[in-house]
Structure formats: C-alpha cells, structure tokens
Amino acid sequence: MKLLKMVAVSLMAAGASISYSASALAQECKDPDQLVFSIIPTEETTQELDIYAPLLAALKEKTGKPVEFFMPTSYASVIEGMVNGWVQIGVHGPNSYVLAKEKDPKLEVFATYTKTKGHFQEEGPGYRAVLLVKADSKFDSIESLKGSVVGLADPASTSGNLLPRMVFGDKIGTGPELEKYFSKVVYTGGHDQSALAVKEGRVDDAFVATHRLDNVIDRGLATPEDYRVLWQSDIIPQDPMVYRGDLCEPIKAAIRDAFLTLNENPDAKPFFEGIKSTKFVPMKDSDYDIIRKLVAAEKAAGN
Image (tube, rainbow, N blue to C red):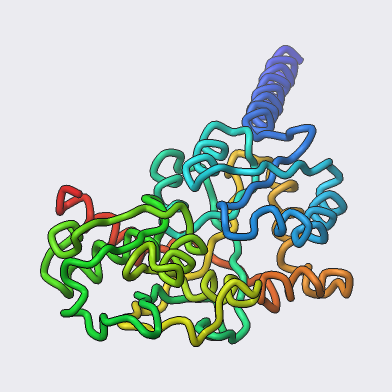
C-alpha cells in the first residue's frame, strides 16, 4: 500500500511536470489582442491601403482579431517594426527580408504572390531588375554609361541596390563600388521615383524592378515607349510575406490560410487586379538563399 502511494505521488508529480512544461511552452508563443500589418513603401502605398482591404478583412475573419495597417516610411521601418515585435505581419522585399531575418531569426516567410504578364514584368512568382534610360537618350550601351548619373531605389532594396552593386558591378568590373563607374549615385527613395527621374532627366539611368515599373506605367505616369532597357538581371523571387515566428501556431495557420485561399473569394478580385497578380503561393526561407549569397558577397567585398 505504501509503495502504491509512492507510485501515485510520483505519477502525480510527473503529470504536474508535464502539464507545467506544456503550459510554459504555450506561454512562450504570442497571442496579441490585435495584429499589425505593414508593407514596404511603394509608389502607391497609400493606394495599396485600399487595395489591401480584402486581405485585411480575410485576416480579421480567419484570425478573429482586429488588423491594423502600419504605414511605413522606408524599408527599414518595416524591418524595425517586425524585429521589435509591434508589427506581426509584413510584406518585405527579398533583401529587406534577409536583413530582417538576420536581426531576428524568429521571422518566418510563408508566401509570395504570382505576377501576371505586364509591360516589362513576366508571368510568375519572380521579377527582374532592369537598367533604364530614356528612349531618346544618348546612352545606348553599358559602356556609354560610364560617368553618367545613376538612380538607385533604397539601400535595403534588392533590385534597386543589392543586385546593381553585386551583379551589375561585377559585369562592369567595379564590384559593389558603382561610384567608381558612375559620376554620381543617387538614392531616389523608391522604384517609382527612379523611373520618373529617368523620364524627367533628373538621372541619366536607373535600376528599377519590372513589376514596379509596370505600376508607374499603369498609373499613367509614363509609357513603355519612354524607356529603353540596357541590362536586365536574372529572375529574383517575389516579395516575401512574413510573420513573426513567436506567434502561436493557430494564429500563424490562420494567417497562412487567409493569404493562400484569398483567390477563392470573388470579392478579392479587385485586390489581385490591383497588385497584378492571380494568387498567393507558399514560399520557404531557402527560396531566398540566392539573396543571401548576394548579401554575403557584398559583405565580403566590404561594402
């Protein structure tokens, strides 16, 4: 009888330990009262606040939580918001996602969107960086661009800074130091500003993402005939959809479901038309290893 009591006490203690461990694990994940969603600034961020309404509604429905939109001022502000934990869901550029992941390994990519064919954009979950000049520009080759003024989008931009420095830089023999080839390197603040700066003659040439260039054209701010492409990159994976990995799993599952099933909702058709897409598709962290290789090369070069 005494032995049975000892076994019972031991089992109760083990059960309490297991229960405590499960409880401790449960407490490690975050279950916020509301979710904050943000997106890297684009030429139509304000417009995209309305465009994204069906997605925000789906997130609210699937998670059962209110969803607030955080209007960013730069790529860095989205990174800061997610790393510091007050933004739970973010749309990054490929490079800004890699930078954010380095700062906080708990961030997780879960989806991206496919793009429809546009003026310069190809169909699929990828895009290119293109080097633009005005259609009537005196610059007609990469060699002729030496000493010109070039526009870059943002220091954290993949196609508007990282690729130009690491891939195009290798092509012209400067490595990441484009300043050795161009007379001046100007950060314009975004792809739309870069495209318009070329059109308006404020820079001689600029690196612009194909889907962002299409947006400028579709808004009537330029036409395809305004530009000539002197160089283009290989395909880059589209902007990653990212959430904080310390969210509780049911919340993460609900967020994934909201994104990946949104194309099944007829009310979301204007959303997909607005971002020139057809649907969200799953993505994983390793899909962005190509960006990590570029970042590693940039660091190795000391830029």
